[in-house]
Each structure stands twice: as C-alpha cells, then as structure tokens.
Image (cartoon, rainbow, N blue to C red; front, side, top):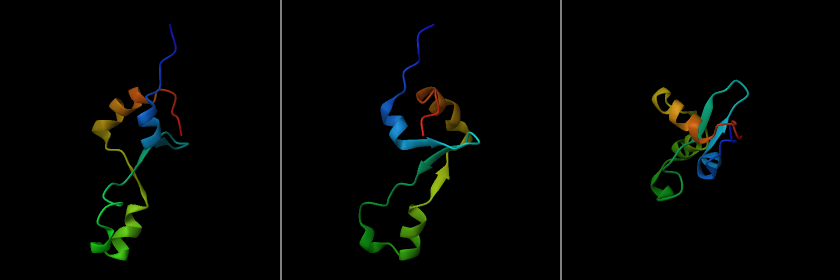
Length: 67
C-alpha cells in the first residue's frame, strides 16, 4: 500500500498534541483589530481544540500527525 499524502495546507493550520488532540488557531485576529478589546485580542492567541465532528475529517488530511 502506498504512503498517504499529507495535505500541506492542513498541516500548516492544525497541530497534533502529544496526547492526540488536534488543535487549531482562532480566526478574526488579523483584520479590524483596532475595534477589539485587548482581552479579546489576547484570547485569539490561544489555541483551541477542533470540534469532535470535524476530527475524523482532519485526521484524513494529516494522517501522520504533523505538528
């Protein structure tokens, strides 16, 4: 069986932790920042976990858990 290819766009957007969670960065942080409070801008820097319904689909895109 041939090797599965990693989708490079997904590898740049998602990271797999040591325990196997798929993490993503939050959107809405690069445009119209002046209107947002400092607290909201700090919250955008945190990584959040991918929803369970999307997990299987994203795992197909990054089969080897690229981090």
